[in-house]
Amino acid sequence: MHSFRQAAMRFERARLLKRKEFAEQIRQKVVSHVNTKLFKREDFPRAFFFVEEMYPEVAHVIRDLTIYKNDNTALWAEMGLTGVAGMYVVPVSMILITYSVNIPDDVVAVHELLHCAHDKLMLAKDPMSQEDMTFRASIPYILQDHKPEWVARHYLLPYYYSIKEKGTVASRLDERDVIASCMEMIEKESGATPTRVTDSEPAMDRFDFLD
Ligand SMILES: [Zn+2]
Image (cartoon, rainbow, N blue to C red; front, top):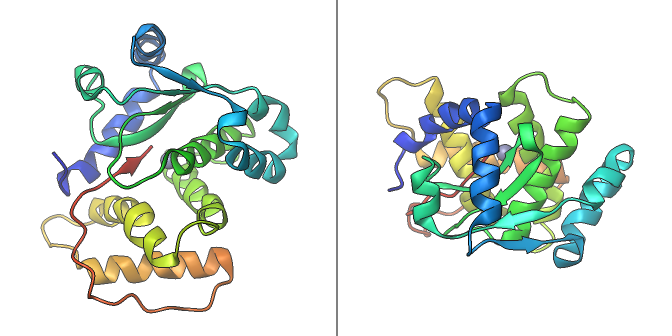
């Protein structure tokens, strides 16, 4: 189930993931699950190098991280963690990749590695600025393989919906406005030439959230 309602759920989820007992429960379930795959630095070298180079002070921590992937939807549903492609679980310093429709694993990895670096360096005082910082910092990495339009639609759009929707009670968000905000963010972070997103592509069908 993917809907705008899920945007509001991210705030609830962020609070839940901060709880130590819950985090420990996730860790145990994921580590012992038969479908869990482990990824190391050599599996996503560019994602790791990108973060290590950006934050050399914590490169020694980033370098040794293990990323756990499990795309078993029942497992995540059981824990109430559906509709999110990746998470960094702060109390146990654990990076998780779940399942996604559009976002490749290395993009999830770079996003969550950045969260870890930001957390270790205590760069953000609240979850919202932490999220904003992470989305911005990851843009140059994602632009290596994807066009700005792709980054806007598949990577930033769900996030922008969630922050914009928070301040909206009933009014429907205009997707074009949200895309325009995403493109501004990309241009600012990449120094790219402004581009227009055409309306020819169909409206986004599915959301992949990243926590
Ligand atoms: Zn995030």
